[in-house]
Length: 175
Image 1 (cartoon, rainbow, N blue to C red):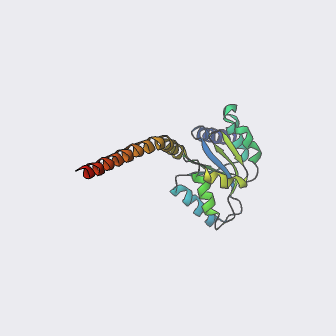
Image 2 (cartoon, rainbow, N blue to C red):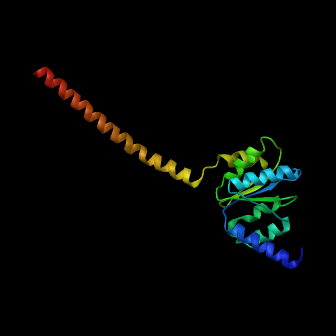
Image 3 (cartoon, rainbow, N blue to C red):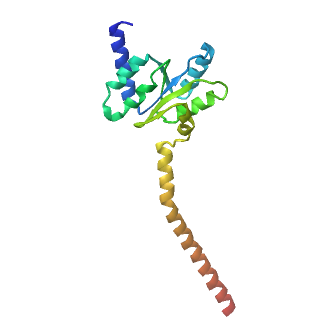
């Protein structure tokens, strides 16, 4: 790779990292070409971008971003073959890795970057699969906020129908 090619690759990686809040670093070495192609097809079907790059280029792209993003914690994971999975959904790559690894032993999770949180190591995969998306969290909060109002409304309507029943019974007895 020439210096110009490296500079272009770093700029491209920097743009990709800058445009996403969720990416995974994996090790898919030892997989056959057929298995890699199957994995890439699964990623494509789920809208996950797959990118293979040299670790030094990945690190330089990450280093060019502001320190406040916390990318420095990922540098230790940049050894050996690295495949980058980029997605707009934070847990889609984790679910895909879990599904693919039901039949294969790789790709292994090296690290994941989810909204400024860094998850290091393959043992974090189970935790990442259980992460809730922003939409799921908002839905739960709305449900919790609506719950007391629903209970109050049901009590009011139940009390009203009980009173109506009592009045009707008293009316029938009196008549």
